[in-house]
Amino acid sequence: MGAKIGGSGGGKYEEEANASINVTPFVDVMLVLLIIFMVAAPLAAVTVKVELPPAVAKPGTNPPKPVYISIQPNGRIFIQDFPSDLATLGDDLRKQVGSKRDPAHERIFIRGDKNVTYGDFMGVMNMLQDNGFYSVALVGEDNNK
Image 1 (spheres, rainbow, N blue to C red):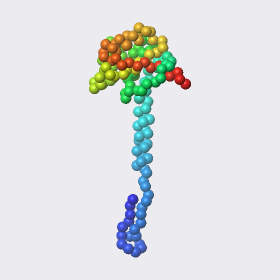
Image 2 (spheres, helix red, strand yellow; image 1 turned 30 degrees about the vertical axis):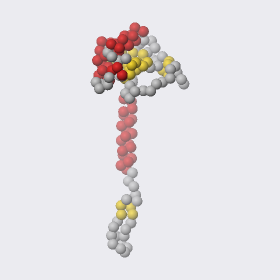
Image 3 (cartoon, rainbow, N blue to C red; image 1 turned 135 degrees about the vertical axis):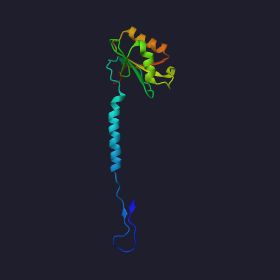
Image 4 (tube, rainbow, N blue to C red; image 1 turned 60 degrees about the vertical axis):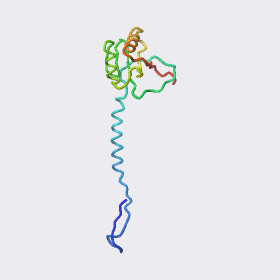
């Protein structure tokens, strides 16, 4: 709050409160944050298309940064949105998870198309276990509508 300070008597030095609040910086900050969130929100989603089978289990809590492995009907494997294969799955997954987190305690979410062969699915599961990733969750389409 500003004030004019001066001597007694009228005139231009009379004490008077300036109670106007400038909201322009607040609005500018809010608009910048809105733009940042609008740009960052699509990056958080997985864009690999698979047709998920229905799930009847109650959803669990998500980890801070979920790691998704997607298996398409033709057997192609993706970690998040990046292609991989069985031979390099462990190394690619370690790069995605980061070196500071323990693979044995890292939960990996598998999104398998409902038309994936059992052999392709088991190949991914075996490769995860061979590389020390033991906590695996299967993602299904929510059927509780």
